[in-house]
Length: 141
Image (cartoon, rainbow, N blue to C red):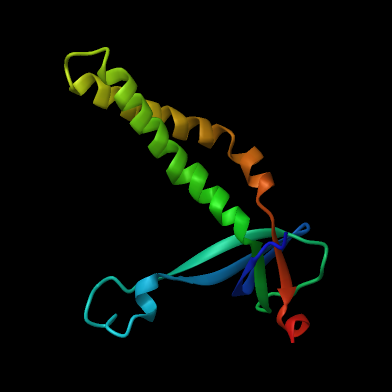
């Protein structure tokens, strides 16, 4: 099975002890729309990513960030799908136990909050499961 990759162009912003900080522009879907000047939805955000590497890079050098597309699916699942499922399951499971509708609603929101706190406490372990590689733009030609 072949995994697909996503590439982004960036610029080396900072170098420290085997890690390289790369800055890149993240474009929303609206930025490529032909009518983006007519609405306020077009936005470009500057993002930064830290990549561990043994290769030598210099400040201001153009690089390409390569990521496995499966990592994006994993991030969406952990950040959006799983907390949504926890909220919905808690809501419907607790709805049969309480006669007041506000208690299941508050309980389901509390469970989502607890999930995000657990996610926050395990952020370093989760961060290790996501890996990015950077390549010099000359290597891609």
